[in-house]
Amino acid sequence: MIKSPHLQVRDTSGSTREVEIHRFPFTMGRQGENDLVMLDGRVSRNHARVVQDGDGYLLEDLGSRHGTYVNGERVSTCRLKSGDRISLGVADAYTLIFVLRDPELPELLEQFEKVAESPAPQLQHLSLLLQMAHKLVRAPVLEEVLTALVDAALSLTGAERGLLFLQDASGQLQFRLGRAQGISTLLSSPGDYSEAIVQKVVQTGREELMLEEGATGHTAQETRTLQGGACGVVAVPLAKLPVLEMGGETMGGPEPELLGVLYLESRSHATSLTGLDRQVLQTLAVEGATVIENARLLRLRRQQERIQHELALARNIQQSLLPRQLPTSDTFEVEASSLPSRTVGGDYYDVLSLPGGRYGFGVADVSGKGLPAAMMAASLQGAFAAVAAGDLRLGDTFARINAFLCERTPPEMFATMFYGVLSRDGTFDYISAGHNPPFLLRRDTVVELREPSNPPLGLFPVVTYESSAIQLASGDLIVIFSDGLPEALDLSDEFFGEARLKELLAECPARTATCISDYVLEGVRKFVGSAPASDDLTLVVVRYGPPS
Picture: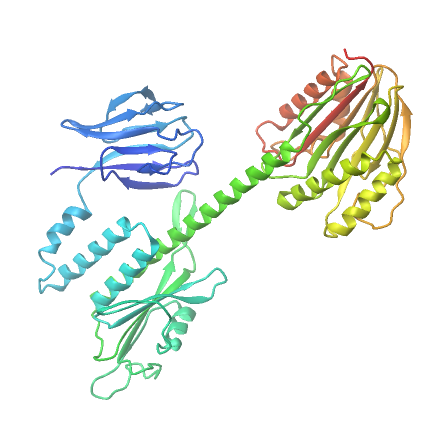
């Protein structure tokens, strides 16, 4: 008997599933047209394929960027044998195991089709289960699977009408579809089914059988819940059975999670079910619930992928708002960096050209993360650039921006900001709105510019902001940063802290803006290690004096 080829697919999260190689060539890659699609940027769009010849199966690399490996060795073409381990791209991406199995569903279905009319009910039931399983595997659309589930239940029980109810996102049971013997799909929820039975299944989580006795006309359980002239009703829960993995062992969860109810009824004749009928029906319900849960998980995954894509676009847009090129001058040099975290944040920096050869340097940090913070940061950046271009007193500039934010942003959102204006003679006028104090590097000393202290922007409608000024000498540096720098976390959740930043600034071997910036960022990277970025990190270094 010819063995059927399969691939056991383990993704980057550790989840494993088995895929049948159902046609040749069987293509694999990141692009959606492949037979096996792998959503990993390190996998090429069209990475590899499996082909069949007279001697078996071949794996062919399709000119992938990172290569195709079989049992750890890079190959361009390789004869596959059962148990071969295939890696696409890099070792920690998808792992595939090529397996040759004895044929299961297709061949068995062909055999059982011959005995489907047999009087032996066991063979009929087994044939029904195999056909249903084949549809569950093959059907690409959830609606087709649900329709097949209801049709199989109707065929098994001989019921005349089947209704399927599924829980929505809020946990409410909603009609999904209905089928009737000899009639197409019911598009709307009928009003003559027994809601009491459906609700009882929801409450108990167990199947309900209400069968009318031919002699008395009473239901077997005397519940009197049958409505609309129904002679019998069978209602089965569709439930996801939770499992917990502990210590390498799989343990059953305490309570199954209800996904829906399959409701079957007959009107013209009394319904009868054997114990085997009920077992098969329960098996159908379990398989149907599995497909429904998988579809829900797939929908959630696609939603998450779409959200991540939107966040990536927002992050790119946010980064594009930063200055594309920093200005050059014979009186100062400036170096600036903004390293985004994995989510969209609210950091930004800007360098503004002002009358009289002066320049303004600003760093802002909006509270929170995500799209709201990014939108507020973009709004703040545009408003500040417009107001600062008017060259008002720094206190007046911040008062106007504060009023703008109070009028147009939610009360729980605010921004901290530091802004300083450097004149050609070395005068540095600066103002801070609740922002981290910058460091001043002067000769062999490192000090903080803590005064004045003002509240953040957007908190209080009426605020008087005070500014201050210092005189810089040639070679002095101002180091401005967001709180993402001192609050960077390592794997043990320890903060980088301002003390370490001060030490790095003091020990930097060269006093140029570029050297200071590179030295600090490298120090933070070494401290953080492999820990993920917890917040955006923005750093602006200004050195007064002729460029080094």
